[in-house]
Length: 289
Image (tube, rainbow, N blue to C red):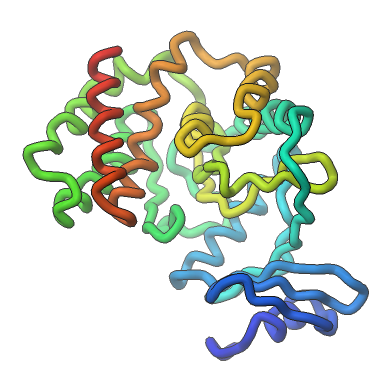
């Protein structure tokens, strides 16, 4: 059993089998470690018992698809995760278009069911710092309401971040999801937390994805996350995606429905501003639906 006080350098040496020549702390939970020979790895301390396991399983599941660029996992335990570091460059239109094509191909590799966790990943996983249960369901609207939107709505109401008088507008969207969700889609292999901060623009001219909350879901959810906080060359990402696997008609009207999940997660973690955005997205969905 390895000590919880073991540092990033010792952890990197343990998982890679190589001596460490340098260590740079980026935050309380993240460090860059240079190995003998010059290779640099990222060493991340998980925020919960299962966080490192969930992230490692997600990275491997996404990498197994052979589509998007994913940093290699060197190892993990109950506390630590060690992966390759991505040498970053500047966002480019060509890399964005390739990311769109690769993301479409990733989604098309599919998942056994909505809510399925990656192989070897725990049912009780995380999205960022928030708990996320990977429980399966047969159809997307019911699963999304029951296991993605409503748990966070209840937490936000319990915290007082969403007033109990405001909750019905989101509950109404959940009730109407069968008609608001668009055509039936098969379960896609999702990154699951695809905001701009988890897209690294590599010095190699490719976009790389990190920090997944991977599970089986609806492909429009990943794209809605990219819209939520903005992303360089988003129009080119969408062009590449649409050329490879066109989205069903009306998808722009459904972006807000898919953003309810991440907005409510953010409301639980960061407060009222995100709750107001979630309520506005719900109202807009009911108007356009």
